[in-house]
Image (tube, rainbow, N blue to C red; front, side, top):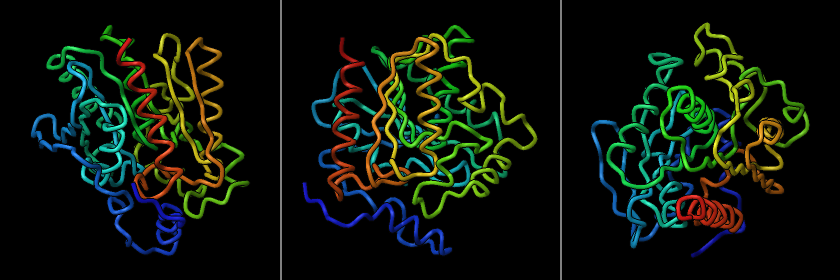
Amino acid sequence: MTTTTQDPNRTLWEARARGEQTPAWETLATEPKGIAIEAVDTPAGLWLRPPNALTGPAILAIHGSGFVGGSSGTHRRMFGHVARAAGANTFAVDYGLTPEHVFPSQLDTVTAAYQWLLSNESGPIAIAGDSCGATLAVGLAARAREENLPMPASLLLLSAWTDLEANGATYDTGTDPFFTRELVRTLATGYLAGANPRDPLASPLHADLRGLPPTYLQVGAEESLLDDTRELARRMRDAGVEVRIDEFPGQVHTFQMAAGNTAVADEAVREAGSWLRSTLVR
């Protein structure tokens, strides 16, 4: 796999900070080899099927982009790399975006997708999400426990957004060029549409984390949301959840989107895939 010495992920966020919409987010990653893509209408999304995939287990992948953008299409390549690394069929789900769709609409959509997978797949289901996709992943696991649904096998959370009040000190200490505290609070306001930012199903930091499945968190050591990951990991451990957390030096938000183009993204995806597989095959 060819990698570059540049950081296309940081370059993208620098461009977004200048108000530029290029490069396109989905172009950061290379095309993962051998992934068969199948569009699904209900629930809306894409199956990403790697060669020689496990029979039975699957991954539900939930994209990020602050509830204002993103799709299974923008994240198809990154989640395809994760699917290959895990050797597991992966369903990347779509959900409605703000301002037309607000909390709890997105959580309802991913919960319905999870229930669909439970009904149609014969093995355990892991959940992977980046940024606000990680927000939804934790909310989904908490809702599954409340509604007596089978618990996910595991949670993979990439650059997780866990504090909708944006109180973390790392907003002031990192080198993230885009995600300011003001911006993140604006995104949260749009998503919540008047709901409490400490609603347990909206904000992972305020969820009841007891009984949640093993969780692996990856985060850039320079991103503004670093404290979001650190604090969630601490609270999960306090609640008795099995937690792994890896911080990647020099990286900013969702650096895994450059899979195939940077060595650090490739390393992160390999680790994520290996860990996911270990939770799906026991």
